[in-house]
Image (cartoon, rainbow, N blue to C red; front, side, top):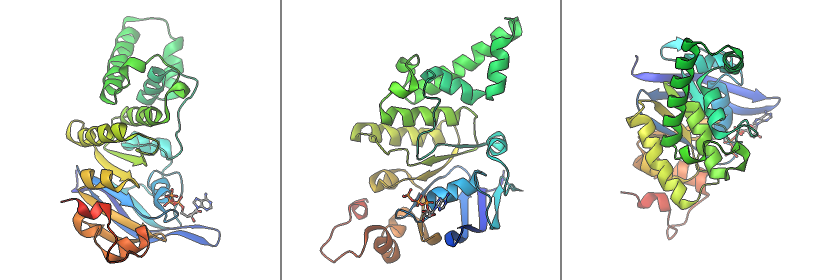
Length: 267
Ligand SMILES: Nc1ncnc2c1ncn2[C@@H]1O[C@H](COP(=O)(O)OP(=O)(O)OP(=O)(O)O)[C@@H](O)[C@H]1O
């Protein structure tokens, strides 16, 4: 495995006359938790969509585990080991919490096929293994007790956790989390911090995370990249990046001397 699980080289993505990403470069180190920050409209979600194959870039390349995967369609990216969650929650809302994770563990067609097969010992074993894995992931995100609830009946923050469990089901090398703390209360957010740390520490997945909550970012990230107008304006150690004047200006507006910036208080 190369040192960098992901290398982005000169990515440009335009929507008509709007350049959402402009010659963007990024390296994500294997085993790191790497945060992408930036003001609204700076290109963060577009960047995730290019990485995961939802959008084909106009220029540049996406190198994943040393292989050029530019333009590879999302389901193939998932098979190669790229998991993701979405800013707008994407769940099978009328299915149970457990079924949502089971579907993440296999392709939907395979799921239907297996359900239509006669109960052979091989199928029984397969189902047992899938259920054990799903239970483990649900316990990991704290949703085991809600496993038989209908997904859309979960509170918003828990639906986000369910998306995380489902994305982990493919056992990805890298997991991309798009604003996982959105809609979470402070208690859920602090639990999320521990969970994301364990996605890396226990499951050995590299984490690329878009997040607006700077307290969360400062507690989690090994590296921060800040985007503005589709370009990288700073990248590196969180303490240095968050004190960078370009980042402060872009992210928080121009800050006077007496203003305090909460994220700068972190040791
Ligand atoms: N499918 C699309 N068609 C046209 N323009 C788009 C499309 N997707 C994104 N954009 C535009 O590209 C720019 C970057 O949007 P993007 O959603 O990537 O930003 P973001 O940093 O994720 O914002 P936010 O923090 O609000 O989620 C914005 O100007 C947005 O309006």
